[in-house]
Image (tube, rainbow, N blue to C red):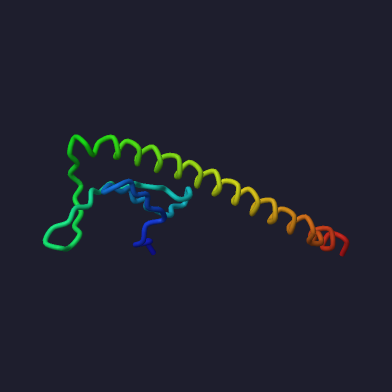
Length: 104
């Protein structure tokens, strides 16, 4: 089931980056969307169009999103490594069944 909620959001002024996670067999893949917020008739709207003065913020948001994703990927790899270690410990602590069968 896809996750309809972002996994991370970064905001600088009126611009924001939203990080989305998509679970696959190879692990989580991350995508980023960018938006600029503006107010129209007393309500906040968003657009994917950026003016010249917004571009430095978009650049910073892209860098921060990139850094966050790489940190998350490192955490995911560490978690997977720990899970693999725990699973191999459980397997090595189980009694060997093949030895009991061959003794019959």
